[in-house]
Length: 83
Image (cartoon, rainbow, N blue to C red; front, side):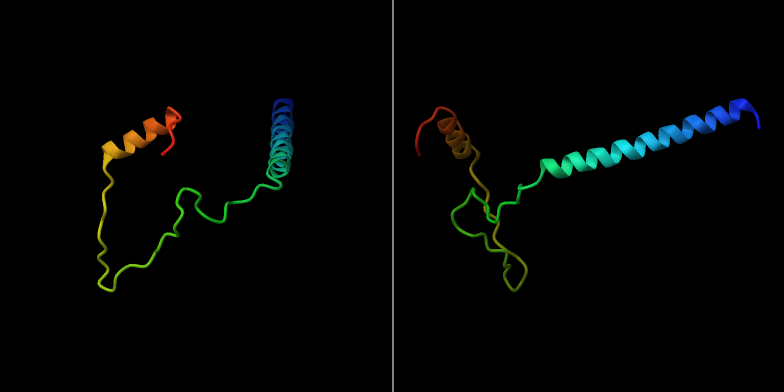
């Protein structure tokens, strides 16, 4: 066997081994970092539950929010004003 081919195969096997070791180590670290983290059970942004039901004909009313009102609310929150 040619020494260059043998050296190439040794390096290739070391690279594959290092990839497997680093992947398993990263998975273990990520799993440990996420222990105790849970998905929230409800949407905290709205007080009322959101209905996912649609009318029988399949067409629901679309309500568009007023952009100016949203911007005013955001600015008020940034400035620390209570609503």
